[in-house]
View (tube, rainbow, N blue to C red):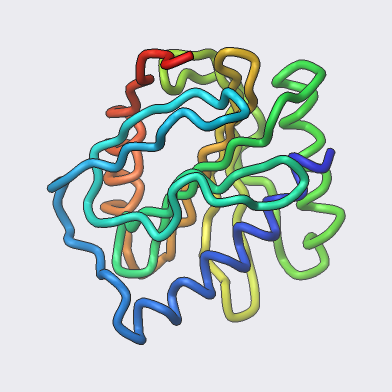
Length: 190
């Protein structure tokens, strides 16, 4: 479960980043204009590349508990796409997604977090995945949706999470989908 607890950490990081943008960090460009390369690391996490609409504030940054924050990309003026390598994890994708949703609802359901799309089979980065969508229904984050996809590659568990602010509209969902569709694994170096 410790690989799944990152949902709240990513939510908090996403809103902290919003403040950093206001203080002069790179802004969202609104168009696919570059790429981010996440290299293979010493532990053997596979490398990959993505096309982007701006720069990433993290490239395989240590996130604790054996996890890394691989990228943090803009998909709208206030929306973000985050990638996490959760390390090597046991259990099926379905079981991990169920644990993630249960954790989010147990921890944040009283604050208005609901599951609006149940875990279902999907495909990401050339791998089978399980995706689901959560929504914040009240408070200052009301309307924020979080779409997570959990998948494995080469024995490593990854989560890609799109945090879509309501004022960015459907364009942020489309931008996240375009960035994720560009995911290409790099050849192994070791």
